[in-house]
Length: 382
Image (cartoon, rainbow, N blue to C red; front, side, top):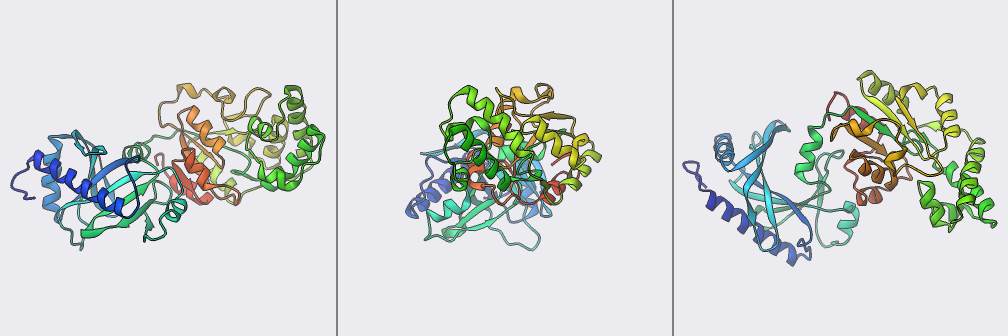
């Protein structure tokens, strides 16, 4: 395409043909993308002059969502007033990267990106005959890339580009932390506590393996998994859980104290949201001298646990969209974050955290170690 003139019809037609060719090749490779959301098409340019030309031209026919510096060069993202329309997809977004210094790009459409709700390892295992490569930002929207013929590429992500932009521009003020498995290293103790509690509640011996296999991060799902339906027995079991828990010592994960100290010093409002009872949670907080880090503390009750917004003790209804983030290690935490429209951060430093389950329930940020949290919140914005 020449930079002397811009014809929207030609641009749209070229994008649609590129996508049809790409999806046809994916089908041959046994990847069927009809049911997947196509996030955007990427249009590469060979020179900075072409970048300026296409940026100006597209501005007449699309909304510029963002222009950001990534790896030393600008990338603009546009939302077209007239989307690409193919036999399987309508695609509204087009990504326009400036060329990297020293790189040699052919001007034209290069890749399409799709959103998947499964761990990359699971997706790759379905297609063992293909050579995928992983890349991108490991915390925010990592990517899985497959190179095809004629320099075409298909990329797979867990988030849409529009959502990535929203998170990047978020003004986070409130940070909600889960407790067990996120701030304190407690999972092995909890398996044993659950075993003892359920043995007493059910009147039969519950093995440690059964406790591990049927583990759930909140009481309602745990009781359902073990068939404990009697409300009065559930209430007694929850009370006994706290008593049994009192016999154990819980350590903070490495870096937890430093992370809380840094975030508080940066002016973030910190909250604790836990499925633990108030007595056992406060005892651990006081032991580690971290209770005062939190503006509010929200505990499990006999009627509500973490997935319910009603169990939050701070006025989350006053927080605007994308001013809150929930950081936790379980699907329960991700569902809880959804219930209050918070950004969903997956804490993955606990070896028992299951990334695949977190992805399936909508995790948006992936913190593989506590220092990832520090790096992401080094300033007031992500």
